[in-house]
Length: 350
Image (cartoon, rainbow, N blue to C red; front, top):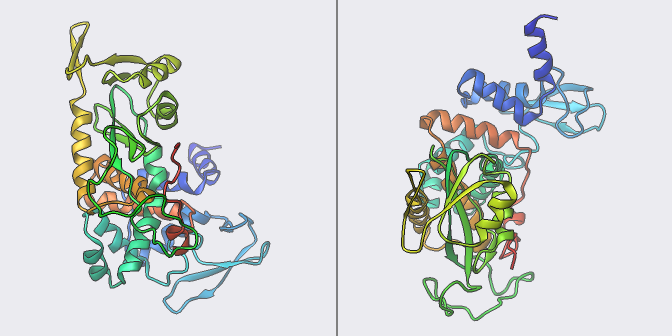
């Protein structure tokens, strides 16, 4: 068998997500124009054999076109009819792919809901739901980062916010007295009114962060966040927090901790510090400040948004194509009611 045939055979065995990565790596870009995007979706999501997007059956036939020219398909195995973009975040919206591309570009430009809704011709509630559908679909991109070399880690904290959870909701009961948004935290220090967000950044500037619990961090939450993210041969630089010691010992990672009130430690004549992670904290806080208070249930998504922007070193046009391809290949289909009904404290170890 020739090398080309081996590559083609291996490509056909890839998952939808891996096909997108392979396709975009070879072409170095993804064409997001309306007229070429449909072919890209068929190629990466269905393959040459036109596999069903629901049951992966191979008995798929073309089933006419919609009014806008989008090709429809019918699976003879499961009986479902679908288009190349079915079972993605764009499902059931009846909006053209070009509108979604335009909206994603607004997000990369850090535009507000009002600016994005006006530019894309959609309502403010639709702009808000699209924001979180896209971030849910792209969470996998930030969750697959791998930090190596010298990695700096530290925690930052955000006030617990129940913004967006209404008192007349049937599924939500306010656990405390309502107060004005701002710095109205009643307990001093690291209390249960603060959300702990462990963060890490390596020498190449790649960052990772995730809200994990309320109050002071412990060793279990550090494992939860950084297990599989920090390379075993990395050098981990932190402050004097005890929670990192058990993690580094278990993973056999070289740990360098700064002395109290010191930002630099010298080991074998090499200076190590935590200035890079402190700079990341400032950038993250500035990004969050644009929204005048972020609900705790959506905090993880806004961190994903910030990291998508800071971790991408490509030109904005290339980043747009790559992220849009990843968004469609994730296979995540989210309804608007799923966003509003999320727990006020998602995935937090209270």
